[in-house]
Every structure is written in C-alpha cells, then in structure tokens.
Image 1: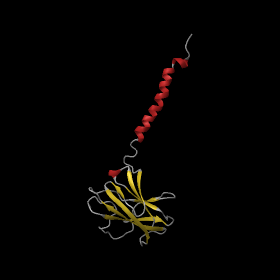
Image 2: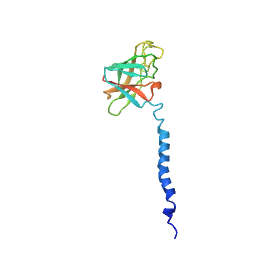
Image 3: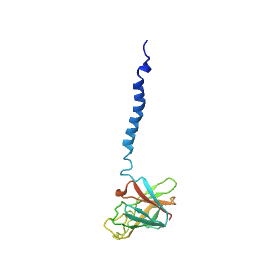
Image 4: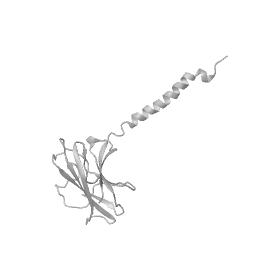
Length: 172
C-alpha cells in the first residue's frame, strides 16, 4: 500500500511551516532595526520650568509668549520662545528646533525669525552653537495660525544623540 501525499511530504511541510514565518520575521527585523538611526523617535519630555540632560548638555528651561510682529502675515500670530542651553564638557550642535502642537492635529512649524524681516543680530542664536562652551539662549520665533492656542512643545534634536530628542513643553 502506498503512503498518502501528506505523510510522504510531512517533513517538507513542517519545514515550510517553520521557515516561511522565520524568513518573514528576519526580513522585517533587518528592515526595521535601523529605523531609529537617523530619526528622532524617542522624546525626553521636559515640563515647564524644568531642564534635562541631552547629548552632554543641559537643555531648558524654556519659556514662550505670543508677541506682535509688524511683518507677520494676516491670520497668524508669533510665538516667541527662549530655550536655555548649557553645554557640558563637549559643546552641543543641533538644528533649529521646531514648534509642535501638543494636542489636536499635532501641526508643526519651523523657526521664522528670518521670515519676519527683522534686523540681523549676531547675538541671537536660533540653533545650538558648537563653538560656544558657555551657557547661551536660543531665541526662536514661530509663525502660527490664529487658531493655534497651545499647549506647544519645542522639539530640539542633535544628530549625535539620535534617536533621542528633547521635547520642551511651553504654554504662551
């Protein structure tokens, strides 16, 4: 009597049942394992009035207020923010922080200091300065729509510290 097809191919079927999910899993791990590299995905939350260690520096506290700007387009408001940066042993280098709504749609805005047509002031910093070994402030201005009321977070990231970034909560 001949053996059935299922019994004849049992070993191959078990191998397929094990190897297909393992192969899919290995491909997924390979593709997703580097997702955090080069992306700021892990926030360090900082409440108002507080600071945090980040990439060897102390970041914060941050403050903000709504201000008037003659060069601001209609239907917008200006959020003026200040973030204190105290470098550690090694100076920190970061890009200009973004402003994000903490709730609602989660909209985000880039620094608009240069778009407001203000006089250039070399003393004002809009991104971390790796040449400064002493405490300094980032002075940031964001154009937001009139319906954006907060609360907001200022997100600051440094390439050396990815995937972490600092999320400073502010309420103008």
